[in-house]
Image (cartoon, rainbow, N blue to C red; front, side, top):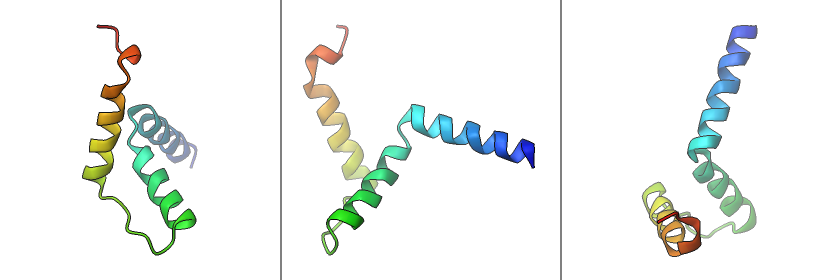
Length: 62
């Protein structure tokens, strides 16, 4: 049981660090706060996320 818990913790950590869990949080929020509204696809979500990242020039080093 301890090994499974450790692996679950590692999986959670990697999803948080990589940003993979951001879409899951978005879907949960959208369904809770905006019921009846369509939820963006993962592809659209990631595109908007990337566009937002690129628009913040101060966030980049070069």
